[in-house]
Length: 463
Ligand SMILES: C[S@@+](CC[C@H](N)C(=O)[O-])C[C@H]1O[C@@H](n2cnc3c(N)ncnc32)[C@H](O)[C@@H]1O
Image 1 (cartoon, protein in one colour):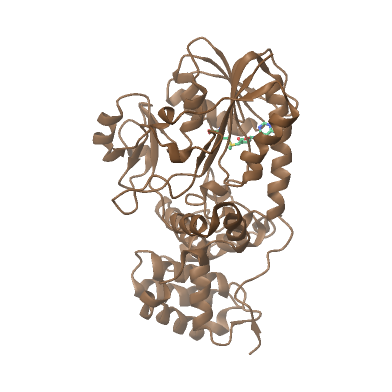
Image 2: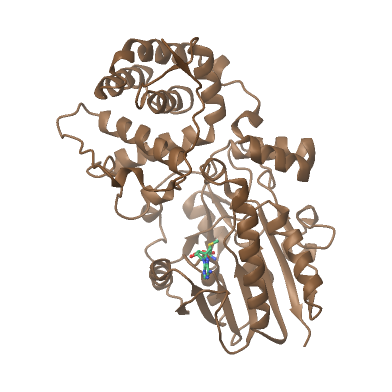
């Protein structure tokens, strides 16, 4: 039997592979199998073609294997895919140790079935017999992988048997090598190790409340964090939680809630939220009583923003426009939440490291610079702006703002004070910009720690 490495090469194309041929799932398949086939297939498409997991699970199912699945099964598929991505390094190492002769060539979806089976056996609360049995059925379902059904059976049984030793790995193994190398340069050996460890923990849901954080924390079984976000302890689906229908709160990571607060928008001010959709920060700005214009290039995402604002009973004007060419009367204050590599959000989006490429960072940094130049030109003299990104790459944060200040002498950095961020001076850079990392916000309760990696700088326009 010839061998191939366990790690496949990602093709350059980002075409939607599932759009070419629909693979209908016959309704006669045994229970649980359609979800396992879907998990393997979605994972192959995420890693193979660079599509984000959210593309598959927000809105109507676009993948033929997801169509027709019950919501409960879709949720299971999502969690199998997420764990597979979050622990991909550990899983690949485990499979490599069990496949003495490597992965057989021309074995169709075998690799994806084994990875998603490993995710269930090593990290999810799926009974061993169900995971092993469905693995073998999934392998038998495809003519190319069919000859390897007994190999898959042996691998799956060994995964269950050796679970403890196979999962005892260095967190860095689950960080894509290109990101680990970058983070080592920026944050040192200690920093990269802590980021890697934090990214392995599935984060809880954070919410921003309109008022009464203590009361809502009690009602929702959550903890009030330093900056008044609430971190929920449980995993109840969002729409079923008290206060959701009434628009008392919205989902927003604790770090993502900081930039809008730092802008300090005031009642009656004319404020622009640039790159606004789906609107977590727009809601915060609108809460202040400012007149908010929410601008985004995507009409579809702005529609979602409008629906969110309606549920929250808040108002903002929406405008579909490209920020790099957007024109408007001057604003008192601007929030620019620029598109970025999102490497600070890998706790919530473990696909980021496997779907983004190193070249994306310079492409995005160039776009951010253009947006910044446009945004500062929209400020009135004396106006203020907060620029933020959910990236932990300096090119998109610290270096981006340093370059803006060099090319625009009219713009000053307005230092952020520790007392504006609940006294957390370790969240500030030497120049008093905000820099959070995924391992910040430790907690005594396991699973309740961490926050997104964010960068924010506050700027003032002089003339
Ligand atoms: C990081 S998300 C914004 C998240 C949002 N601020 C929030 O808090 O909910 C970035 C947004 O930038 C938008 N975007 C990307 N390129 C753009 C451009 N050239 N002009 C306007 N919007 C753009 C995307 O459609 C996306 O909605």
